[in-house]
Image (cartoon, rainbow, N blue to C red; front, top):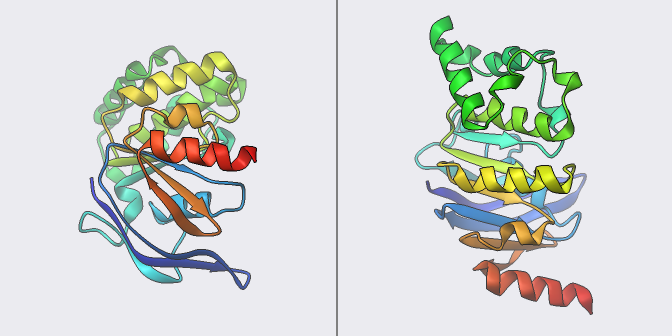
Length: 221
């Protein structure tokens, strides 16, 4: 995958949230860190068009429009992502625009649920699921659309230790490239690249063992 940000700026309420971001991203696992309000989530939402730049351009491969067809987004809170009352209905909703037959839709849903080890949740009511189960269903709702890239906004924040560990293990097995915004620095230590955002700019860009210790040290002073 190649995602290119060319002099991207985002202004909100008269304030520069992101300023002149230029990046070429091609690594398999990329982490984004920074303090609250630094612009992390805004940057992440640019990946699939949830946020539009005021200036500059965002391109995935050769695509500048309809980024959502290529890039999946997993929200921090799965309740903001799950729409339908039953798991299989929610996953089917994401496939409506693909114009698949019922058999193909059912097969794709089952395959994704089995891949994540939650096939038993297919006919469960979503409001009865645990937090960990909801996060996996939200991920399944993205995977079923077969995105070429997946971005995650603080995916482990609402999870207990057991479900966090399970989610981290699953993240490591996904074939798709992933970009993850997280305050959980340990989650990102095995990644290929980490970006540090400060005041709407990329202040550091490199390997986790270079960027993360420097970020920790600066916050401990």
